[in-house]
Image (tube, rainbow over all chains, first blue to last red; front, side, top):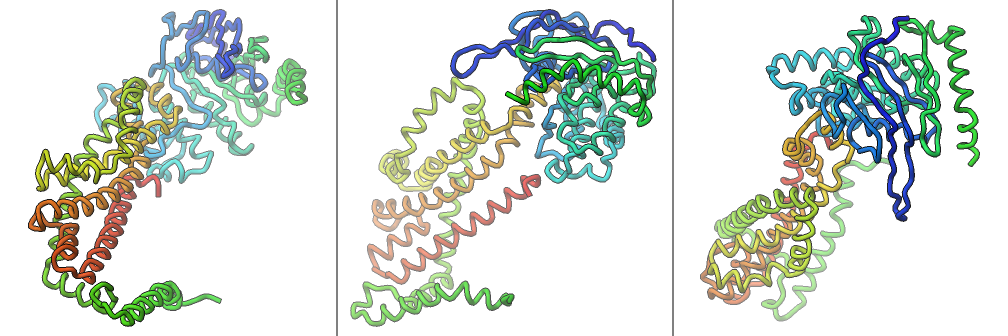
Length: 274
Length: 259
């Protein structure tokens, strides 16, 4: 395994986030959450629903501000959304009035990602990422004309085309059927750059509730617990890269799966029963 | 069993045809024909009015005012609605004002409009824009509010600025609702202009500024030709229908993603 030894990219130190409920009470979504994500690392957050995974991602994206705690990127505090941190939303958030190609082009055209780029360069970049996710045939279609899997790939291409330093992904594969999901996990690792040396990879924070997905994708898995959302433990995933179908069949894969499942099983059952 | 196109068309026309025949029969039974328009005479009157070019000219005059007034209303109401939907303080200040003017019918503003602007085109355009303003502004505000939050967030995470976001996310996101506002506005604009022309006709003694409403006034107050008034009524309905179909086609073209 090539360990990720990069500098700290994202630092979360004793983060807490409270929300006001409609009845005036306050609820704690995340508490005492500390985690460093290194440059080029694929970090996956898992945990039962309601454990505050999405809250953490929104804080990193700058879409929400923490109630207390320190949150930095490259040592600078995060104060709002920015093009250095691309987000892939759970429901994809594709612009319905733009075709696949226009969606992929959006950040380059209207955001800082495309500054100083000629129309030609921009077009080449868009074409490259549309091809990367195999949407050449569908690039002139609107989102509503696409299947769930194609929409997901379009959102992935839009995220990648901006080439942000950090990719924040909120259960991007959750809405897909099991087969499509496996295919896209492979694609995601390829696009992330698992065939390249670790120094050339982007930093990823990926949310899922599927343990097998977490083990397959991650360098490290951060396991969260619920009520309030806290970090339980961080588990190294020392499976060699590139990973493929054979990886899923290996005994280490099964052992890691079991280890994580043991960590969250009690709570998952409790959540199901209550 | 499947009906042929002709059979289905015949079925659709059966009731209207029956009603017209009934109307014709009743009209012929009446003694005072002057007070009762009947279909055969309406048809003759229609051929007359269209053939002489009077009716087409009046329709064009009315349409010109509608388009002028509608354009003015759209230029004010849509940008205003975009700002109101985005900036809470602006909405809080303007909403009570707009909602308290809204129940005042366009035709009730007419006395002021005539006093200030005379009986010409300026007053007509003013009345039309007043009528069209409300559905446009209300639907624009509603459209802005219905823009999905995650789309705005997606643009924000790509580093897109607020002004650009207004143009590239808020406006297209609100467009379907603005389109509905346009359809309602065009309808009430057309209603308002006919009513305004009728009333203006009363003031200037029939010799005013033309239009379908004015024409109806003349047939009512001077020559008392009920058949011709009915022709005008039918023309008003047909033009309204045609306007809506045209606008719907234009909106569908402007929003290819809704097809």
